[in-house]
Amino acid sequence: MSGMVDSKQQKLSVDEIVKIAANNTRSPYPFQKVYMLFVGELGIPNSKLYKFGNTVFVVHPSEQNPEYGVFRALNADTAENYVENSKQFVDKAVADGFKGLQTQFTDPTILNIFNMIAREEKTAQNPNMGYTVGRTKSGGFSVNLVLAERMGR
Image 1 (cartoon, rainbow, N blue to C red):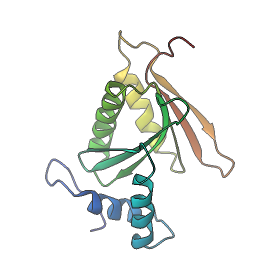
Image 2 (image 1 turned 120 degrees about the vertical axis):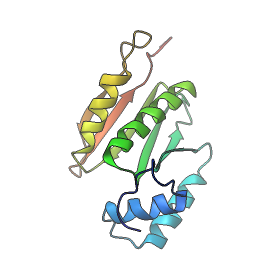
Image 3 (image 1 turned 120 degrees about the horizontal axis):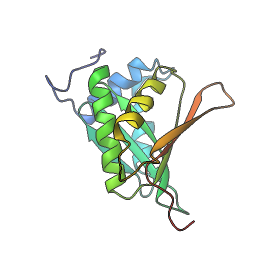
Image 4 (image 1 turned 90 degrees about the horizontal axis):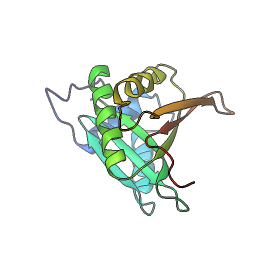
């Protein structure tokens, strides 16, 4: 398996998603190494795994302030479904009490997904939902998602 798989047609296992995502991101590492790193990442205390469609999201809450954390997405779904899966992830992250999440990536087209999510997920209950974008030292992107207003700080 190497191409994207429409989750409305076929649901993939987490293993299959990791394999396709590793191939699509053109990782310099073989799948076995990518998979072992992924398994190791899940072993980090308090890690959370979310799966929507054929997209897996891994969140690592901050030890100091668990309402905030870092995440990454591994996608094997179509672009349209990836956006929908990401919206479901944001909804679930908010429901789970997250107020802010940060991620890093190199593909500039991923910024479009954040734009769509922020536009569609902003609600009267959370008018400050949005994101900020920065650049990493290596030339990639760093995105901070604001999921809920910061309260009491």
